[in-house]
Image (cartoon, rainbow over the protein chains, first blue to last red):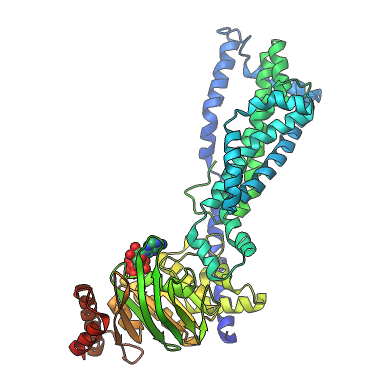
Length: 284
Length: 262
Ligand SMILES: Nc1ncnc2c1ncn2[C@@H]1O[C@H](COP(=O)(O)OP(=O)(O)OP(=O)(O)O)[C@@H](O)[C@H]1O
Ligand SMILES: [Mg+2]
């Protein structure tokens, strides 16, 4: 519209941006010491157990003290054995997650967007979902052999269902009022999907992917229990058969760390996409 | 000119929301629709905006029949309906995708200045007050330069002070391009402040009960006698619309109404 008005608005806009910028950024930089509160309980329990074993109150044979678990982890890391197992496990989760999540996103989007597809697909998928996924194991082994393919397939199945349900549900629950805004501005179907549906479902899609990833970690253990010679799951089985509780606990701790890191990575990567969300607080 | 001819709407469940509405609105005129709850005001706006299909009758804009959302028709809903993932300026630019980035930017900047929110351009909708959000929604509808702007109780959720200041913002935007405005409201003061004509509606089925011209000079002095008497006239019409037996034919009532008030 008029040129004069625009130059006016420009200066005040910049001034305001400078004023508004520091406060949220500052808040983010300040470290919240209360986070440390969460460490108090596990550290206290670990120290108590360590002391109990040191002072001979307990043997620590079946429940090894933290120092011995740390030593086991360290030894495994030094020989490089740990990294092989971690690498194999992560590779299985990653391939299963990518396959399962991709299928879940595509089918979830189709069944959320089209009621015909939903009527066609959803009953079958819901029926399949009712089957405990571990029940597929024998079939997958028969079909795909005992090596990687059957393991990846099991993980993919585990990842698929939460992603599929989350995406389809998110699309179905998009606010009709916002979709109408798209209609008013005469968006085509594709524009509507890109400019309104996609951003609207992103927060729930991230949550769906996170629960899919969590299940991926669960199913990799199941997969590695069914005969593996490598992987953190193998370390667990091996520790049980050889009577090495410290190795079992070391593998469990490795799982906990990996799971947390993978989840944080997913949250970190998707955070810029859902910055606008008006939630009480960042969900953990 | 916006013309509604024998417009009727019956919803799928059999509700007769509108029956035989005839209304023409001159170019640049501001018409306010007043009426009790459920008399079909929102339905009427949704039909004109092309968000619902008419059951019978036609809607014409400068002779062209409207069937579906039209680039020359903008609407502001009762709630702001801003897209929460877009900043204030991106929200205002939502309907300007066809323009060059520079053209978009200058229009948005101008609109922001008009509604007094230049310093909030890069904030998220969640960080704005209700009144500020509604201003952004109005700017989003105005920047596309519609010929017809439909407003569905856009200020009803706001307090009297905010409402009065938004009336000024609205008139300020209207002055620039003088679109035809259809404003739904529950508030008689608001109708008399803004409109050139008040259309009083009646429910079950929704129809027009009476039309009152509001020929006060602008800007309007809300403390003046003329303003007071206009408000009283509209209030009386509204009262009658609620009390008149509904079986009475509309023409007859119109004649009675005319006899009573002029
Ligand atoms: N989608 C729908 N399906 C069926 N009936 C509807 C629908 N929308 C509205 N109605 C009915 O149509 C009538 C008119 O509704 P409308 O929303 O247009 O009223 P209104 O004048 O805007 O009321 P208010 O002032 O309370 O907003 C009401 O009786 C309502 O119950
Ligand atoms: Mg309404």
